[in-house]
Image 1: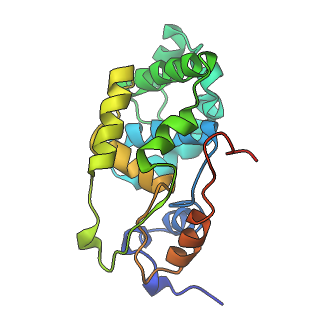
Image 2: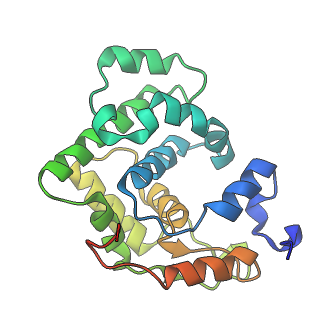
Length: 205
């Protein structure tokens, strides 16, 4: 059955790229460390901008940031950063670019210490997708107590560009919360996927 354009979440109706992102990615629970690092990095890049701006540049980000392999990004030099700042394919904001590199180093350090980025991030929703029941966009928050808690912990660890609003946008994208409208075809799909949330340490099983 063809999904009705009119019933999709209204925020995605501006372009085919937006619709595709909404239908295939947004809100789908993600348990992959590399993908979560990408999402967190791109949400940080979005700060002060529209998401469609970042989405249009996402493939450039993936190409320039080693597909967000944290180990590779962590080795980026100052010279490499200088070059990235001049690349129009991404947002040329030095602090945001430096933040991705700095955050990658923290992810690598975590892994060396036996910590899991996946477990850390999912712990803020108690390893279970929060199933919201929005009927209109007016009830969707820009931040929550959980995203504020995530922000505080990440900042304490040294992560950059991880404010409460950025963290909540990340949680929505990564499927930690289901913020699709109840009238949206994706609502039930994401709800079903969320019911299959895995236990800590079992993400890849």
